[in-house]
Image (cartoon, one colour):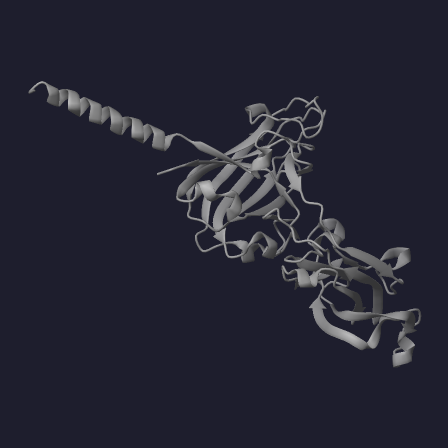
Length: 369
């Protein structure tokens, strides 16, 4: 019996060591899980592969149940399945993770609006995109998570995930002379959108021969998302975005005592429901120095009662005394179920462009402490 104690101690030590090794073994979760092996239906840029780009991806908790209470240690992006060789390159990335105050459907177009108080800078440095062989078996084919098919971002500091919407904030810049000009990552796409029908033409300095200087994003016209309306105009000027019922015939501005030949109102004056004064924010791109954008985002409740809602929007430029083309738009009759969102734009701008129907397929590496 006296000789049994060293044996017992050895068994206990072996058990403890095995448990520790198991706890440290990395585990993987692909989001969305349906594309663990198979290619998704779309593709998306990788930030910094060919141009400066900021991408914030909001991932709903529904995708991350297995990660709650664990530490995220890496993220991988996989190439999309096309019969094309992707030439590699080098890019510079900074990656920050946090628990967002928003859900994917309420993703903010302001970068700061999506970042949580627990933000952790998990990576900063250069990475290499591999030269990746063509996928000759066709779109939607299985694509392995192998080094020649993926960009692996191994964190310099892990992120503890305790639940909620995960915000993956990536800022990428290209390395001169080492661009990967066409290296497209796999992405999921949910085909839900509203409709928009243009009414008339605009007047003034913008919009080209057709006077199309106002727009609406059909993909944003879904319950639960922020409907996006924008117009182009004079930098640092102001415009009025008006919402209401379409007029059956154009109404000349001269009817209101405004001397603006060729400019028409496409809304019924007694059926305007809301107006907003919006500034034109100058573009940061050097080729667009004389252009600015005014934008309005309207939160559409994720409720079936909003299915098929229809309104008309027109812009009035206060600097030029000009009117835009108008759009009669209709909200989609379905609520997105992707539970992911992408906010994407130039890193130097304060806002990006939100899509609640498109997001990268990601593989998360995690460990249980």
